Length: 324
Image (cartoon, rainbow, N blue to C red; front, side, top):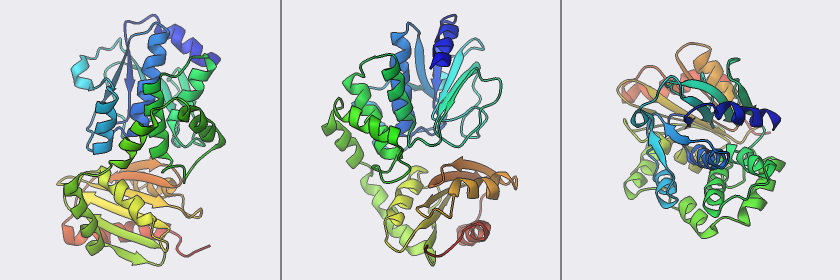
């Protein structure tokens, strides 16, 4: 943590600090940025939480609204080259982190990424289930009590990113869970975690059942054009809850590109590696994530009748089928 204190000392020279999440911020990204902003304010800095992209998941909007989290689109901040940027729950150079005006000075993340050498401070812990856990440890390092509202947000982020503590959970995550449960508004945590869907999105469950293709323990499926991107993850987790399914590959297109989401509870299939080798290495798109959960973008679109077969042909060679 000595390097983090050096970072704070360096940031004290500047008028403001921008805490940037990845372009489509989820609960963990927003909660971690919220916690970091509080910590930096405590240290006398002037932080702003920002993102570029959009938020289309009702539970994420509820997290922001119900906890009064001050996050704003980057173009509203009038960013300047002198602004110092800390990227949280994402990494400089990744395709889902827009290069904003300003100097990227730090990365705090739990994904399988590598920060560029010019970044002054890097704290990347892919063994952690959530970036929220890293922020809990920051508060503990400074012996700073976590306010109930911050603890509530962090517990929501930790709960979502570990799928209610059923995947990628480290001992540090469990320590954070025990600590946050003593402080957070558990009724609010449960309310945010329960309300994940809007009524009109229920039709997408029926849609995926009509399009999916099963091969042993793997399911492929495509969603209607312009389907909310967040529903790929929601439906992927839903399908993964089926006893006979260990791997899920879903896609959703718009007029310009195709979003893909992969889920795995099979140790033989590291879906982050599969996405990188299938999209990044071939130059047809980009993506990444975790061994159990990953996503990406294909830089072209297809007719509805072609999409599912294309996705199947693209990813099938990299997926190992069968049960252990």
